[in-house]
Amino acid sequence: EVQLVESGGGLVQPGGSLRLSCAASGFTVSDYAMGWVRQAPGKGLEWVSAISGRGTSTYYADSAKGRFSISRDDSKSTLYLQVNSLRAEDTAVFYCAKSYDSSDFYLPHYFDYWGQGILVTVSS
Amino acid sequence: QSALTQPASVSGSPGQSITISCTGTSSDVGGYKYVSWYQQHPGKAPKLMIYDVSNRPSGVSNRFSGSKSGNTASLTISGLQAEDEADYYCSSYTSSTTLVFGGGTKLTVL
Image 1 (cartoon, rainbow over the protein chains, first blue to last red):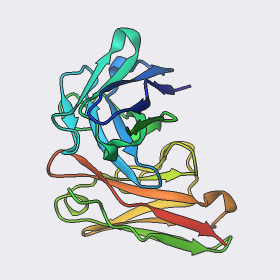
Image 2: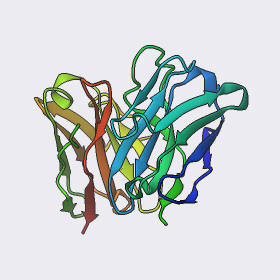
Image 3: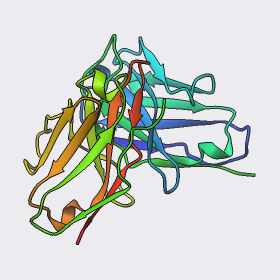
């Protein structure tokens, strides 16, 4: 059974940083691209970032470029999202998601499994 | 990249069919066969319902179907059931090598 469990969220002051983690199990993690999608309270889904199966390619939404960094450690079956220079509008539930293949040279265009999400609150 | 356009809400009675539209541009929905649909119940994670315009993942009811014409994709749910009440989001690949979601549609089963 595929399981994705996010951690690392919480309350952070504007300008602060967090590293979100996503522990994956139930599949061979290195064979699949992964991504992050966020959802502000009461709002819709917003794609944030994705990384290919071997970590060779990374992709970012304009809102994440320069402030967020996606990475993976397949030896630990864990996906990360480093979020820096946080603003109030970054307050959201961040979902980790698994893609359908390794997507070594292209952005994966859908996610077939999602974690339960982790809340990041940016406030002073 | 602007969000794809979905109706804020749709409703239907049990047993009826409803269709949710998702309108983009030739740079996203109209340019690729890479539209997907997700169902989200309150407080829960999104669930993939349709991928690549019209394909259903294993385990998703055949009451759910997808299609596309030009810059507009559609999700049709036939034989509405109470458990279908949820938020639905479309998503598309874009020419900027990003993904874009729709604003979401709240489905109410009357």
